[in-house]
Image 1 (spheres, rainbow, N blue to C red):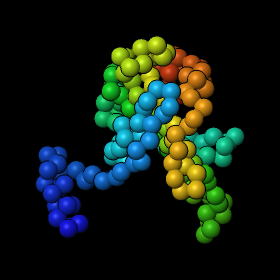
Image 2: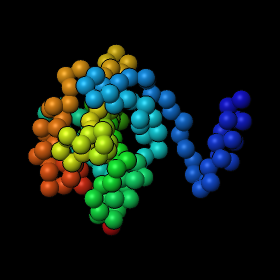
Image 3: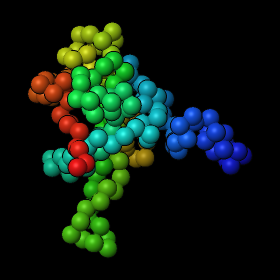
Length: 169
């Protein structure tokens, strides 16, 4: 059955790309009703950047859906439907190369979605969601998104995103 499922997925994909099949928990942010399911295909998004939060000892991968990725590449404003996902990993020293760090386990998955109808009252029309991983299960962040909005206001000149795409030269 698994082989048949993979064959069907590959044959249905008109570009012939490999796609990961993933499911995320059916969770919702309490204050804005953003669902984890809205980014269920995040594993197929493209990595646009990484950064490290020293205060949280957290390596972050920043991914973009195709809409946001095109805007990043063209250096144009992010249109409605743009989704930016941030995956935060706790790091530890690599056991076989101790001068290096590696991602150990996911602490959180956060995302932003641009939607000028649902989030017209938010700066830049961005909605925010945060799902924390504790004891191998995800939970929605119950403290709301006020802190997300106030922090992202610091990046107003970059359409409220801290992350600029890292270009490979």
